[in-house]
Image (cartoon, one colour):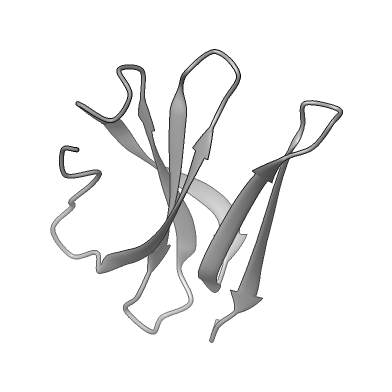
Amino acid sequence: MAEIAFQEGLKLCEVSILPLEDGTLVAFLRENSGHGWDCYKSISYDQGESWNGLFRMPLPGCHRPVSGLLKSGRVLITFRMGPI
């Protein structure tokens, strides 16, 4: 598996990888600077061989994200609220 995401100035860790029905993988990552910044996500369309983008998710203070797919097809992400 390739490196999921890197961006200068961010401390990304604690990834939760969500496999979708079409084979797409979505990785939700904690930002660990201690500033309470939002969660980030990256997407793979080739089973993790490569990852596209680093997109900010509007989940402030997101620590230990855990993602899942509901029967309705919607995504649920639980997390521990860190400092904001």
